[in-house]
View 1: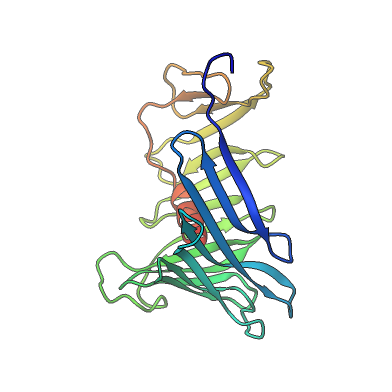
View 2 (view 1 turned 90 degrees about the vertical axis):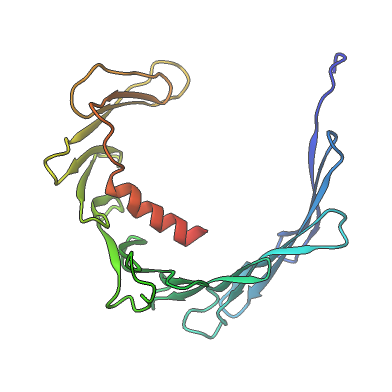
Length: 254
């Protein structure tokens, strides 16, 4: 355009299944001529009407020869854990096996390696309030009922987190405003100062949010946009809230 070369990146959907999901995707560009094909496979539980459950993902550079990079098997439609993910594979190798509670929430993810598992329990509003992992220094920690370290939390009725206790027994309480925005982080350990968070109206015209964070009193640092006003004397450690959700999201979705 106007004598300047333009780069283009294109995605084409070449085939669909009977339930409207693309089965083969072609991606290419005009920069280096490389092409990638992705072939996805699905299964359908017509008994419980659970459709388009991903079973495999394969990649190719020519659309003919494919390599399997990811696959998932599922419990049968008549099993108590009907059509929930059972085992996860990467490049043909087993990565993890899942078991579930009676209500369908994930109970335990057991990885295909010694001493690697995560157990979830005491759910509320879809969030586990107790997460167990193997103890730090045991190579034979296989029974979550007797050999574990844990992080715990209490979930409020609206789904927000009331407090979290981390693996080192540090506890932090959390407060929220009327629309569920975080307004306070208060460690039970008095050696750490409380943190308060407030929100200002945005007059920038960019639909940004102005957030003010105060923990101890030193000169304020402000940034407009996602504006953060921070008064930190010394960077506090990540709150237990961070550790709780790291384990929740990492082991649920990866």
